[in-house]
Image (cartoon, one colour):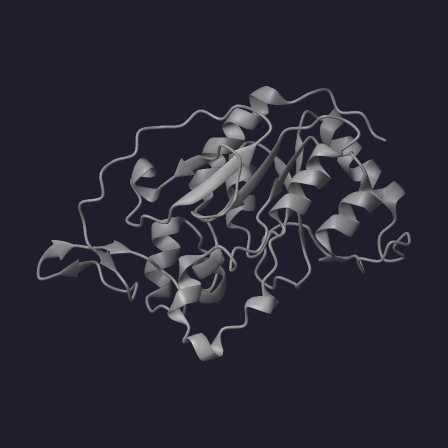
Length: 252
């Protein structure tokens, strides 16, 4: 794991020149490089990797099980430090302020001041890049995204609904949304109820980790990560589209 302090000063742990060299060598070898902000446990990262990107993750919290190169940093400070050296960008800003699950917490235990809407700031960051690059912002249903694409697990044959929204500065093609006909298992560790198949939520401190890892193809992740992550197949689908939108890379 590479460590970056998030300081506005040039980090001592990992030089900008070295990062530019690594990214440039990959690009010259025909491998596009995507930066994943707020990467978490790496669900989105794995999807973009499967689509054909080399992915570098950034998160303020060290992600023990993250399966790719990772910088521990403030997302905004990191992009200002690194510049426009990447071919594409993805961000999954914290979703708690927009998630319906916040209402599951008793009113006297809610801490709304702890949750900040970083979507406008992320959009401004991407739109302010010196070179126009494809970017995607992902969040939950209810988040204030502009003309977002909605993806659901049923579109990919997954046994979970897990709706997610995706905003982008490039046009993303959607796909048919199958009707939800199966009951959702709130616990997340059952496949059937009275003989009827169940859709799994895998939220909170769910049971059935091995089942979730298999269902979502996230064999490296643990309960805490899976409960927050999006299925990799979502960003594999989006990443395939981003590959057709790439511009020649120019190191700043």
